[in-house]
Image 1 (spheres, rainbow, N blue to C red):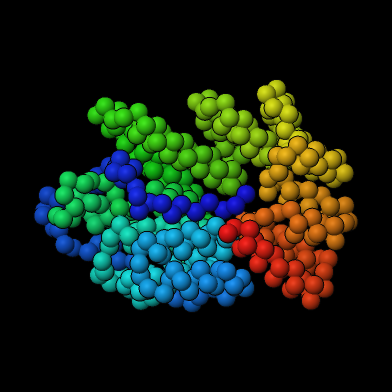
Image 2: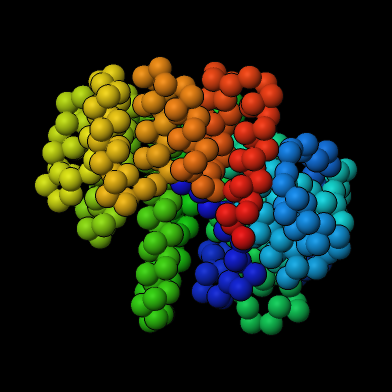
Length: 392
């Protein structure tokens, strides 16, 4: 699956900016302390990532990031992300934030905070998360504290009119909550996620009591579901398998049929990944009552080490026209584990378009196993060029 990075917050509708007023904001407004700079972010490093890029990506970069222009820059980031050049997109945020006064050495020093700044920081945080640069991500989030500073809310600024709510993007709040699981105190992520869930509940309650349009309430309920699923996912990564599974079951009770099926499939993969064959079989039975998923059967065969059977299921899925990166990736791995390294590399390069970073990493690992240095270099260059051309 291609990495999804949200870049559309510049057109954010007011109701999506709603957020409960924190104590710090209320106190600042009562004391009329407008104008004080509370949030002072800055880049941890201005060193750009050195990555091979296609001519198309280089032209995109040069065109969109030669100067600070919100519309031009945003379109450039979208283009680079669509090309799967996440490292280059991250480089672009480094250059832009430095030009906008949030560069290296600026953390802890008074600076300007605008919705544009926070949109750009939000995109950068998503890129850092996608590229697994967790240490940099955690360091650059530190100046934002608990995202409750007065200058992170519209009502703190006298020139914002009647607009209220948070300047911080919802994607940033999600990352801010989850990033702690990669640090020395991973369980603190659970505390933040539960606080985030509570705040989203408050927004939903506010919308319900003010007779807001149903579409507004639905949008926030969708956000609540995202937070709850993140909670279940983080529990799983923390080793709380049963608690995670039960949480997903609870979410499923209020989900649509399509979403419930997707959750069942996800839980089945979880059970297989921890070796819980009994639960996996039960979940597989539940899913096949409504849908015969060859992908899940393939995962079960992979779990049992039956790579030939897994390959057969995946080929059935491919022939049915339901190709997806996870299915194609699994089929390539089946070929690899069956000793067909060259076939795996050929299959990967020919069939997977616009891969996410993890899939690209898998291809590089296969090349290491089955190709000479020269062949590996040529294939990677062709692959990088090809995925850029396919995105245009």
